[in-house]
Amino acid sequence: MERKHLWMDKQSVLIYNAGQKYPTCTLLSEIMQEALYQEPELLLKSDDFTSLEVETVNWLLQRDDLGMSELDLWRRLVEWGIGQLRTTLDPEVIKWSDEEFAALEKILCPCIPYIRWRHIPAAEFEKQVSIYKCLLPPELHDPDISGSSVFYTSPTYSTVASRIQSVLINPDQAARIASWIDRLDITPLENGDKLYKSWHIPYQFKLVVRGSRDQKFLQHTLTSNQAVVIIKPSNSTEIFGGYNPLSWSKKSISSNKEPQNTAPLKDSFVFSLGSDEKDDILSRVIDPKDSIYCNVYCSPVFGKGDLFPKGHFEIGQPCGCKQTSYEKPLRQSAEQFIIEEFEVFQVIKKEY
Image (cartoon, rainbow, N blue to C red; front, side):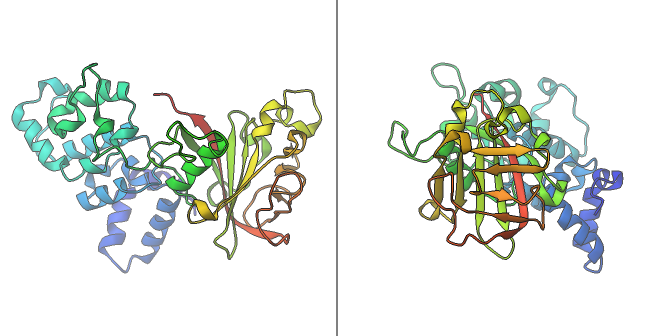
């Protein structure tokens, strides 16, 4: 499907509404379902997004897989709310009347609980959100003794999961991967926790490649930041993955036998994800020299077969898990499987 056609980007809400209103428009519905699978925030980015019904807006804001920051979602929500008014508001918020604030508050009230306020950095909240305090619940903008917002400590808003733009893993699973990156299984947090919570993930998982969207993953696709690969086999509920603490440019991988600092590679690991942490398998590298191999002819290989594609990571291609260079096997069978879907994420430390 040619998802990136201009007409889809500009009129996605029109297409979505037509598919919802007319059951016989099956082709439109299928096109939109596929588009929302790949980019669920598509409707919110559309030029005609103010035509969305409030029920659709709330449905979108409740999704964990939106690929927009919480601050951008808030900005878009305000624009949507203004678009529902029968009057035009002054571009300068400070010039709005009490009646205009009240009218906008009534429109946005059902949607505001679905913004994940905790995930807006406090400084950005103060700078770009507090100006709308007349629209917000009091606990979101009451200052503490230091003058900073305490919105993130409110029980109503403080335990809402981070979003992750993935069709393969959820926020709880992303939190477990982040915990392994920081070795909480070895050195727990001060409170004794060995896992981050889904609402407290100190990393952004930035989607770089998805097989069904971007075809194959080449080694030069990602040349900076540590990264995580997630793989789903066909006809299976298994989820496998690997973490690379270095970039995947040719000179950064130890198995290319070029001079480099291999110390970070001791933090490499592969894993299998279950429905909860008790079913997970975490397998750390034994010898950093054998952690990762990559060249122009293949996607990254973890170990000497612990997680390896036959060629590039690509839907329909064989992949295998045979324990050699990492501590534990990821599955009982050493037989290869076919890749149904895969994703590659840059892992970026959040700044608060």
